Length: 218
Image (cartoon, rainbow, N blue to C red; front, top):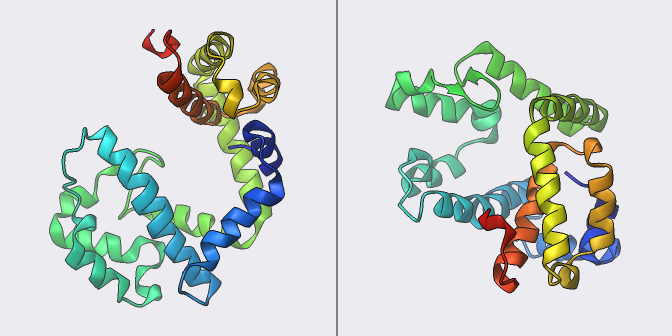
């Protein structure tokens, strides 16, 4: 969404300090192999700490009904060979056993179902992006172009709301660099829509916490 140097300027923390923080977290994982440390990160940081809490809020703290969060299945899956789980193979087989009709539902992000050849092709391409960063950069550029073209209205709206917040909430500058955010807004067409939305989420949290006049209420 943003480069490390941009994040460093936005949050007013040195790049080296951010990298050291990440290294400190990863070094605490018990795994010795970097690939397994990545699995730990994906499940614990991205899953438990990020996705779970966000989904809790989105569901207004109703319990999850996803079978993949079932502890018995989770323990079973973690004891399976990595080869069995690659390219969502275990997930696909589990869905087919539970309810084939559900497995046929299209993934909204990539417009195909988990049992389709297109889905397998998508996972193959994604695996290449991990091995060869140049493919990742090309895909990111194409995705950003598509999202920007499809979200021009919301893109402009978020840009305007961010400017409103900078002008009305002084507390934002206590935590973030207003100058850097303004630079980003001046060149907002270079950023994909959800990049600005993530930034807007952070500024809105600050505004909701510290400001009496909340532009987000509009």
